[in-house]
Image (cartoon, rainbow, N blue to C red; front, side):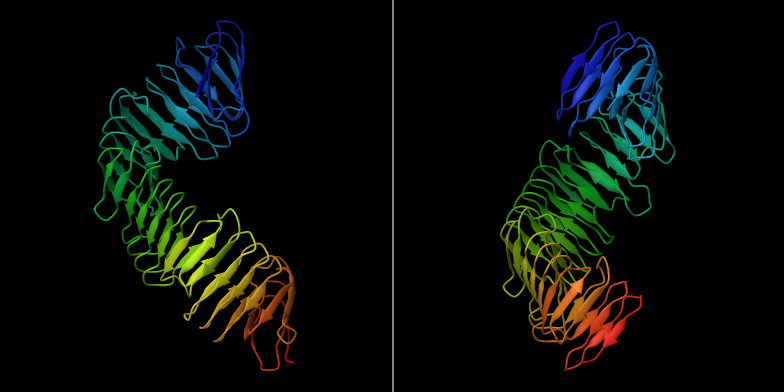
Length: 433
């Protein structure tokens, strides 16, 4: 992070583009301008001789460091006194420092930072209180907490304990996160046992449903709830267990095991192993950097997300490029996404979605459906001619026995052998040839 320090006069400090900056105006009526691009910029009042009040929505500060104007600032660092730090409309990072501070969130997603605390902290977002090594603060409208380097107790929906042996307790509403993306080495997190170990200390977790791993080789295990496990960078091992889980490997050569129930597996970049387990499981390639070829019959995927091995997978969601999807002998659901895709159901009763682009939908054996329920406008589908046009592109259809229309006024035309035609709720014109 680049540090800019002003004088005791009226200064203008401007951060660099795409670089995280800390701007300290010191005394005087200063103008603090954050850099552009992906930079995260802080207005810092650590040297203020008395308390400050900072309001990001109006871009103003007053108090012990003068009356400043703030532009393009995402984070505030308070003084050692009793400050009032107020977020803006886009979310912010609020670090009160020492003193009994008021941290007020805004419309967006706001974090309270305690990473500079001099000893452990106890933060309860439901009660709106914190105590310990950074003073006794009052918190309102704060969605996430970042703890200290000591043994903290954090309660809320989004918790990053940092170093130390922390107690992380979710808010009880069924969708709480524990974040380990700042760990100094790999972590092992198990929601069944409620424990984590490794590069962020030995934590105790309760009421946590979702985990974000580190940049290293992590092992993340879900429980019987609906879990989301994000591996991040590194060669990670993710196990969903019971429940309807979403496993995201991130970069690296990851192993994803959905376990029981219906799961969604996204390997990310790298040569991954995607193991669905029981239930209807989907492999997703929406983040591929180029087209993919996925063959469930051979259990392989190649292209813009690496070379993956797939077992127990029934559904595919492809990339935004020109993909090739091939089903197996089970009942598959194959979604081409954007691009001009070739989608082949293989054996089984399959549902084929070309989505947007000019796609080829090949049913194969079994009773197969061409589904247009996500089309952006009305579609005309003619099984006799083997064509579709309209709000999902111009597709070619072969071996299709059923059509699901859009939510608009569609025209669905059967072929000589008959077909099942389902409208999406608007006016449908159906014709049997």
